[in-house]
Image (cartoon, rainbow, N blue to C red; front, side, top):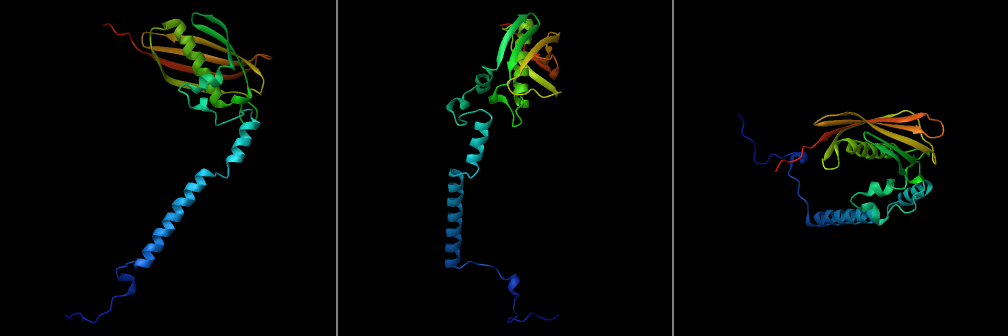
Length: 199
């Protein structure tokens, strides 16, 4: 076997790479510039005027209002939308108005607002049967979006208990156009009834 010569050269691609002090300083300066530019990008978002214009077009004046950070903000958002019509054991009827604040880009009722209204009506309907002293937890919420509800339209929201047992309560919620009676959305909510403590 041949012994390697002490004067053998190592290809440049296999040599350990080290940065000179000037190259290291240049790399640190570039990293600092990148961090400063991202901080300034966060402060001056180029899309902010477009987002603010979108909110103004759908009727929300100030998307940065302080009450948006409150614990239960969507009840404040829905309070001007949902009005109670009738309440009976196992059945609640409400009237919902499609305000600009809960409309989507196309001028119809936003799908998230449909879900929020369905949840609120289902909770209220379930408590007419099981009582307000028992806690309930939403286990499942299924929604069928059948047709659109245009801006400023009124909807009749009917909630009725389908089944109520010791542990489970099932509520059906239907959204119908007030003017035509056309079914727009249907929902079915399943709740778990938390048993009362015996202490």
